[in-house]
Image (cartoon, rainbow, N blue to C red):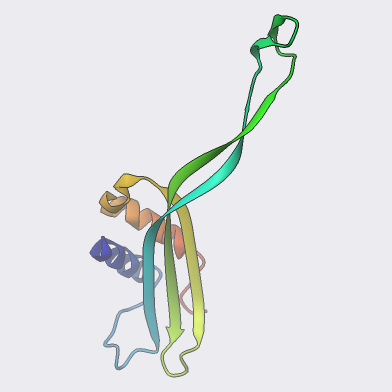
Length: 130
């Protein structure tokens, strides 16, 4: 996965006119980090209608009646990538892009084309000559 992300970053930067050189002679340095973590949240869960609704005296069918409101815990994985573009001499951060989205269990088996698309979107604001 790390090699796929590296390849995607190199291709995206090259398509924007940036050239990779020896780090000792470079003006800028690129760094990236990515991770997937498990998260959970409590969200409201609604129910009770439309359909059969029963009260203390009778049952009725329709879109009227008391609504049930409860809470549900959901579990998901969040994927995040952080891209940093730093000026080498001053160590000044010139550009940072952060992308985050829910991912499934197959997050680490994404194809190179899928990773290229995500990286291109992440670096869409970066332009050569700025």
